[in-house]
Image 1 (cartoon, rainbow, N blue to C red):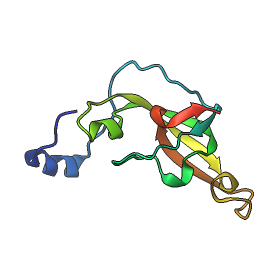
Image 2: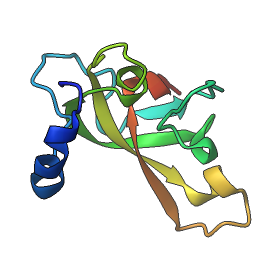
Image 3: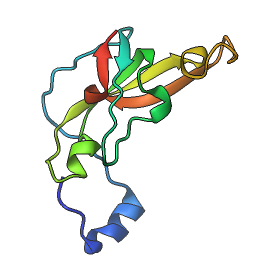
Length: 116
């Protein structure tokens, strides 16, 4: 993905820009796998929401391979990884008072996940 210049902004705003990459990266997980999110405390930005850090969820879908924003934003290249939708029960995220039938869905990269 090229560096964004001011000349590119109007076109990207009008048409959108995808961070999907056409690279063969072996997925670490498949639909139905139980995973646990890591709990990093980076000094910079991460797309891993704090409220799901250290929580256990289930892979709902694999969206394919995308640029890993945590690496790309810090000039470390695209570091392509699979992006998954992970389902967490509301009780896992918010505690026993949360609705028993409620769930939270988060789109998360390989680097954020470990097998549970």
